[in-house]
Image (cartoon, rainbow, N blue to C red; front, side, top):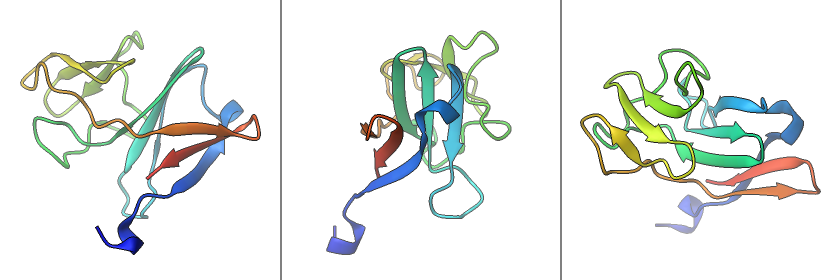
Length: 118
């Protein structure tokens, strides 16, 4: 990995811009497809790459920010129907069962900004 390809902390949004229960995608490279998404469930805050382990680089939502099932209990790959835990991104149902989404490190800056190491 060259120096220019090294991951860097990128400020994504303010914490209060994320729904208390939901997900939000971020297109960091301006390709028209989210590179990563954040899941928030109360105090739980996780980020994952928008890529299903069953078919790498396949975008997971069927529309912008639609990463969770209707009960907001699992992350869903709408291309394959795979379901993943919110906490670990572990596939619990579907063709990639036992595999996990690629987690993206997050941090809160100045008590309000959400940044990702990407």
